[in-house]
Amino acid sequence: MTELYIGSHLSTAGGWNALLERSHEEGGTAFAFFPRSPYGKRSKALAPAGAAAFGARLKAEGYGPLVVHAPYVYNLAGKDEAKRAFAIEALAEDIELLTAIRAAGQEVYINIHPGAHVGQGAETGCRLISEGLNQVFERADGVMVLLETMVGKGTECGRNFDELATIMDGVENKANVGVTFDTCHVLDAGYDLENDYDGVMRQLDEVIGLARVKAIHVNDSQFGLGSHKDRHANIGEGQLGIPFFTRLVNDPTMAKLPMILETKEQTPTTHRDEIALLRGLVD
Ligand code: FE
Ligand code: FE
Ligand code: ZN
Image (tube, rainbow, N blue to C red):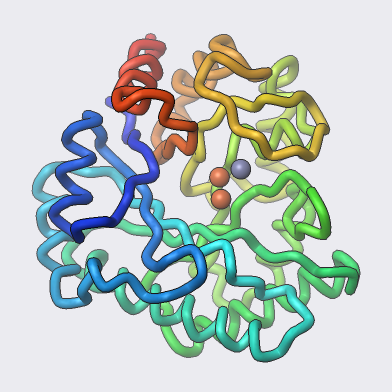
């Protein structure tokens, strides 16, 4: 089996080159970052002028796909028209920024939390998300948007595979959307990855299609099956445990995908250690 594409969610402080240095320090071959502040302000450190050179460097160094994380503040399923309009505009701008990286030959995706329907109902929420994405893709469509599997806390949309499939069905250009499989979230949502790995993968394939899954967030979970909590644990220290991660990194379909750690950095070497740990589980 080929080597894993793996890394963590990195700080963008210091800009493009600093990102790459942090990735080197942890021994990564993929990574994530926020293209904006958590509240949606465009990052000054990530000047569009530097994006192409950054992409070219990653490509030259053999990096796997980047899985950039959109700010949490975007809610395509919300009630507030102004906030929806902001999310659409900002996501289109993020895609434009990342298009330069992709144009340099480096694959890159943007992962989003699909949205929260804030009491309008899941069906309305999913429809609003599809419509919002169609508007985004009218403005910019150079980079695939990945919908993250959610735990279903509050009014989150995308709380099961069916909702994600529904959202994708409503997107006109199917080539623009895929899924990020967050291991903690999928367990918390009620899929028994701990005891029935094959069964969950079969459902994923039947409902979404494995070919549409483009990235993995590798997190252990503090709480168990169906908890809907969304509390990440360090690898091997939660409910999923080492047996699950061993399955994952030796699953030929899943192990090809970029894997992003979103675990807590307990010490300065936590992520480097977790990357090495997961690589060490490959047969
Ligand atoms: Fe996320
Ligand atoms: Fe995640
Ligand atoms: Zn989470």
